[in-house]
Length: 138
Image (spheres, rainbow, N blue to C red):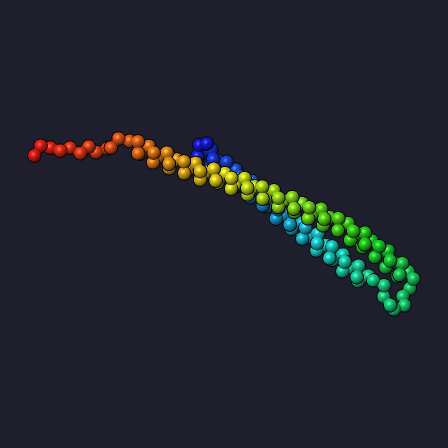
């Protein structure tokens, strides 16, 4: 392959790697956000736990309803967290594949440069001597 073609492919692969890494970082941020939301919901659930002090029945019903809604939210947050973690894993795999592609192109470029050096050396060896030694009569 021509060096310019390999350089162009390397630029494309480098851009693709950057895009994939950006997507991976966004996925990690989403997963972290979902984890924080899940922990916040857990804190709210703990805050609405039944109190040992006597309270009105209405407030117990309201607290039970609120707890039930928080548990539903916690389950939904857990599902979103699992989905976000799956996206992070897929993005990490895509990043690894992009790195493999980029390193393969870099190896091809290095091999092409080494082949060009060997070819140039062989061409120089095959050239006739540039300077003829002339012996003039003394």
